[in-house]
Image (cartoon, rainbow, N blue to C red; front, side):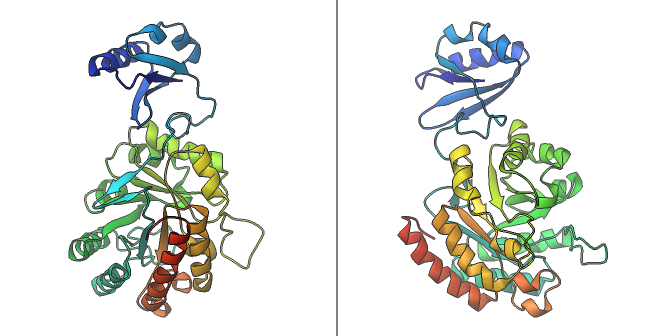
Length: 337
């Protein structure tokens, strides 16, 4: 249930409704929009309908939220959520490109990549420091040493930084070093990690699980938001199907559909979706045309020697060409890169 407040409601009136709801045992969330000021109330719907809240000063109406996901839904917030990171916004007119290696391998590799992608127009650098790999014998990441290198790269280039966390311990370390936290596909339904991510103040990129439905994906975002962190960015990265010519099957239909269902920004990772660098440019353009708010692209100075996901990584030269091509597509749909 959501309590829609009059936009002219005073702070005292909003506070009075808050206290009334919490006194009845409801978990409350204040969501401010341009068109609406609402208080999300999680609890027994019948109890709130008989509570007298609808006639309290400053209250416009009570509206039941029919979707199983509440805070994520457009029923709660009509306009798009825009998330500020450093000097740019995710979910606004500019399409944000995040680029970098699958894994932080060395100081030289990361700084070189950061400088190259920044020069091409990327706004953030990605780099895995904790790597959940299929094989226990594969490179698992540099952990805190990698986080320190990411922070250094961000300072030297002015790029925002993002890395994946795999548990509460890595989350606790990462928040001290990077601007954006990523919850990967394998952890989309790691509910304890989602709750922990909901208690930090950093934006969270939530990747869609390997076989997750869109509703399951949105419910995972609800876990984060229900703990108080409303800065959630959804990332479509391909789902597992019967097709074996690509690593996964990129579901571009998710971009416009999720934007109908939810107010959260949506970005696309064409690198993990395909596993093939030649497919990254056309699918990146398709994602922009479909309405994506950003792209997460793997770039490595020498993909042949990469310790992780070299075949899907663009070279710096190919990334530069792609950025030029993406600007034309963005302009065609009324946006910028």
